[in-house]
Amino acid sequence: MAERVKVIGAGLAGSEAAYFLARHGVQVELYESKPKKFTPAHTQEGFAELVCSNSLKSEDVYGNACGLLKEEMRILGSLTMEAAKASRVPAGGALAVERDKFSDYITRKIEAQPNIAIVREEVHSIPEGYAIVATGPLTLDDLAEDIQRKAGGNLYFYDAAAPIVSGGSIDFTKAFCADRYGKGEGQGDYVNCPMTKEEYEAFVEALNGAERAIAHAFDKREIFEGCMPIEVMAARGKDTLRYGMMKPVGLYDSQGKRPYAVLQLRKENSAGTAYNLVGCQTNLKFGEQKRVFSMIPALREAEFLRYGVMHRNTFLNAPQVLNADLSWKKDGRIFFAGQMTGVEGYVESAASGIYAAIGCLMKMRGTSIEWDATTVMGALARHVVTPTDDFQPMNANYGIVQSLGEQIRDKAKKKQKIAERALQGMRAKADQIESALRREVRASAEE
Image (cartoon, rainbow, N blue to C red):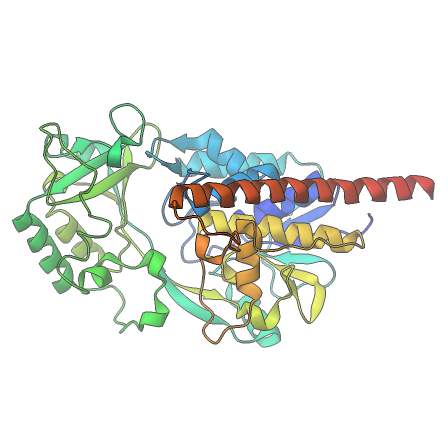
């Protein structure tokens, strides 16, 4: 195939798209603006930089939709899943990674791929010819304006990241290591910071009175539920946090006692020198973050390596502008991938990169693949292109997956059957892709 594909953006979606195409014999030009120009949230030169949490969520293939999506991606040769395996850190039933190792792994793999030419330049407009635009929710101004002008209808929401503290500054005499319901390995992958009723209520009161970094009256439509700032959650009611990210259910200290509330810390790296405050995405001013989170006994002397931040994320009104294969309705050679399509989450973004690459590859081969909603990947793609009056970002979940067509009361058995059907379908998709490639090779040889 003589024609090249331009992939714009080397985040999770762009890296997956470029790598998938290159592995299947396509010549790729991968454009990345870093290090010449960074977005407000990015600080490192490497590809697939994780700017919020270091968790890729559940690994439960047969009980969690995101865990199932990961396995679907592995079937298709996902670079994200390969990198996650090489850089994982203990996180109970979740797949968490060491950020630098994760990014370095993906960067090295792409740099070593002979079919990928890396271009460290900013792209100012939608390119011509075959291309996959995967510049993420913080697309740089010129390209964002060009997409807005040509595609129209851009929407937005606000996204937040949690603080990270130094492992050496945590008071482990006032914390305990354990995983909820003992799902992790060894003595527990999470550091749990317990609070009494009085400590918890004082913490919530401080959150409600703390000064925010952006003086903005957030509309409920502007904040994605999956990244809701902790202070916004606290304002919903005194016990909201205790029934949410600070719930003590399934956690017991060394005396067998369950705390009134608990803040969990997750390792940022395998050495345990940095910990993420799980679920504590925030828009508080930096000084206020230090003051409020230090009220938790185990964090009284905490050293903050990174404070939480909030930024505006943009995404397309995908049902209006994208086809089922994530190609642009105005030009079917242009594909979009990642969060800008309306999927939300690291894994979902990476999966959309693979999905868009498959669509692009098949179109270049003069064929196509029909997707349905029996796989999580197919269900996500169907969600983002289905017309709706209130299009909003979507995580992987069972609600968007096609029903089984039979009544199964046992939830665990129902999820297992959904997973088995999805994995069987994804293996068939992988075979279909390879068959299409083999047909083209035979046709080329006959010519």
